Length: 191
Image (cartoon, helix red, strand yellow):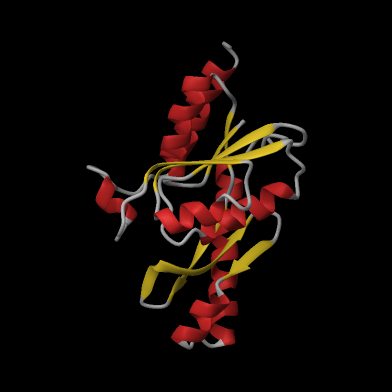
């Protein structure tokens, strides 16, 4: 099964699922961004109640605990909204006993993917693989501790920004995610 981290990971996951004729779904996660630098993650949350924090970064930046909790609460609301938006009429795929490929559009700090790994492990898949087109090489190496296999196609040093490695890094919309899930439902059944 191929699970894309919404929203940017879903188009990448779609292509992997199509190539493998495998089922595609989303696995909701949300970055907890530093105030004023939201793309810099001090933590992440995932479906099922998982939360991963980079305590060193929180301390280094002096982020007060009440800010951490306020950002967490706000992102949990968005996580719940997305869970409903992507699965309005059907439950998410059951991954118990299955090989799962978690896919994102890139990995900078790794905290979002780490939250996804922790959360998916609670659902007892047989194996967890990670796949991203671009990642920081050190972060890619660290992710190998949490998954049976990690594929990072490009590992530039320094990474700078995931978006710099795309010709078009425009935001994927909820509607595009739903369209990809619908399209994927057709080719997965053709295998």
